[in-house]
Length: 263
Image (cartoon, rainbow, N blue to C red; front, side, top):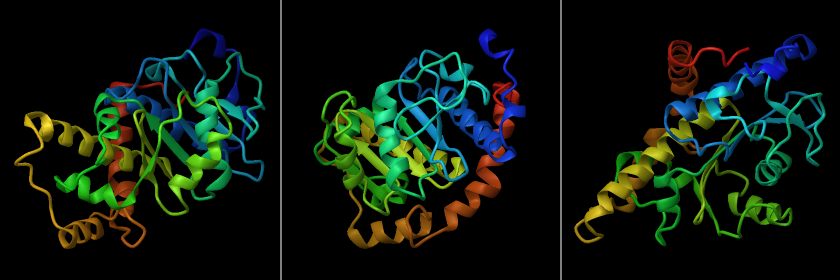
């Protein structure tokens, strides 16, 4: 834990439900770092705090993702006001994106936003995510698109971002910018991002020799795989696997490779 947080006993000051949200959010930051998805101190992951206030947790600006702990996360309201004592402040661009989704999607308890090389590369391709891999077809029906408007400092962009995401989709390619996923749980949000990022990486590799000769699957097969994969609203299989198997496995991995996230 960073030295300036050691004297603050956050766990005893919050509810058990908020502490669990903090631990889950800190896990996402550490997992992002372990997978090489972080962008130094930039990009953001947020988790809604259980309760009626619509507060959410986000990273302290300036802290590397592999340093973040449950206690160091900053709690803010939908206007960007910090609502719990902390020595840290937040990234305004992170607030713009995350507050938009938390304010308008009650099911989006958790939001991840990344700037990976492969995610930005595919977001910059006119055709977007192509149905050229099983991984892409698992998530493709759930992917929305939002045109680039510059660094996300303009609060007016929130309305357009939410409109593009829509009421049911959980993944997005932010054009010329990066990737985004959301979900009811940290586990499901992470799994969506894992598949989206893998699909983008596969696409970049497949297209490295040119567009000609790359196989695309037809619409019927795309629909079949989307249903089998369970990442869309009409198929819940992946959700069950994620909560029961994937997330516990990720926790074991962190306990071995990046302990301390839950302090």
